[in-house]
Length: 464
Image 1 (cartoon, rainbow, N blue to C red):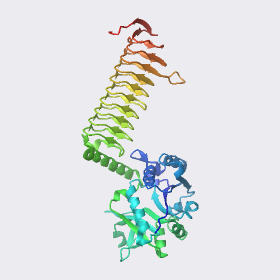
Image 2: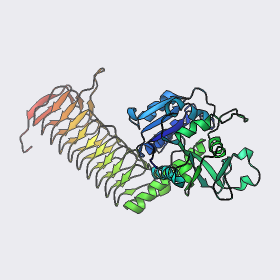
Image 3: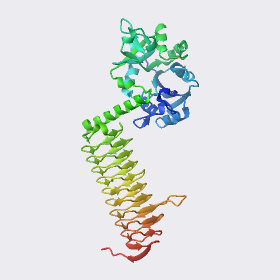
Image 4: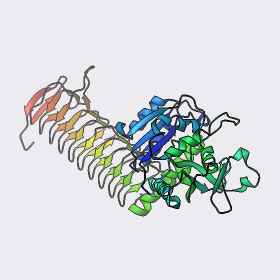
C-alpha cells in the first residue's frame, strides 16, 4: 500500500485547573523547557509534512513557546474557541485536515516523555495493519495502578473492542490494567467522519476523542492497538506533584547516564540537579547541590564544588569551580579557576589558565590567558590581555547613564586595588595603576599612573 504523508496535531488548548496556576499547563517547565516544547521536538524528529497546534488558553504565549522549537513555515496554529473536550479540540482543525489525505498523529502537549522512535513505530504499525492500514491506531500500556485512566477492552481474539472510562467501567472492566494513553494515529479522511458521530451526551457535556475508536469499530473500520512497555513515556502532567515526579525522574536518568557511560563522579547523586541535555567529561567530580542546566558542556577532569549553578555554558578541561558560583552563558577555557562566590554573566569568556576569585562579577568580557581577577571586582564590557593582574576592588565603569562602553586592558598590566576604569578607556601593555586610581583617559604602554583623576608618574622600563 502507498503510505500517505504524515501530519501531526498537538492538543495544547487547556488551562489545567489542577495545576492551581494562572499559567497554561503546557507552559509549565520540565527539564528547563515548556512541556509543549518537548512534544514539539519529538514530533519534529519524525519529519512530518506539517505540525498543527491547537491553542486556546493563553494561546499567544503558547504560540511563542512553540516557535522557539519549530520553524514558522512548518507549523500551523488552530484556535479552539471553547474548551469542549478533546474531540472538539481535534474538530477545530477540521478545515485544515479534513481533505488533507494524510495520516494524522495526535499528541497531547502535556505528555512530554514520549519518544520519537516510539511514535515512528506507531505510524509504521498503523500503515501496515493487516496489509491495508488501519483507520485508527491507539497507544496502550499496562500500569500497576490504572486508576483514573480509560481501560482498553479487547475481544476474545485480542483485538480492540472499546475504551471504557473509569467512571463508566464495571467491576470486571476496572480490573483491566491496560489503559488508553491518549496518543493516536488516524487515517485523516476517516477521522472527521467519525468525529461527526461523537456525542456530548455525558456529565461534562464535552466531545471526547476517546469515543472515536469505538465509533470507527462500530462502522466496520479497523482499529489497531500499539502497546508500549514503558509507562513513563505516556506520563501526563495534571498537577504539580506529577510535574515534580517527572522532573526527578529525568534528572536521575541524566546522572545515571553520566556516571555509567561517561565516567563522571557524583559525590551525592540524589542532591545534584542535572538537565538531560548536559554533557560532562570523564573524571570530572561534581559535589552536592550543584545545578547544571540547558546546553552546558563540561570537559574532562574538572571539579565542580557545592552550591554552584551552571547554565548554557562551555567549560574546558581541568577547570576548578569553587563553592557557590553562578555561571550563565559563559565560556571557560582549560585550566581555569573560578570562585568561590564568583558570578560569570552572559558573554564572559576566560582564556586558558585565567583565575577569577571570590566576589568577582564578569559580564560580556574576555579575561586573557593566565590573567587574574581575584577579589571583589566588577569586570563589564572589557577585554583583558594575557598575564595581567587586576587588584581587589577594581571596577570597569562601563555605563554613562545612557550607553555601555568598553574597557581595554593590555598584556602584563598591573591594576592596583580600588582602581576605577571609566570607559571608554584603554590601558597599554605593561602599565601599572596605583591603588585608588581613577582612570579617565587612555594609558600608554609601560606607564605608571596614580591619583584621581589618574596622572602619569613615569614611564616603566621593559625590565620593570
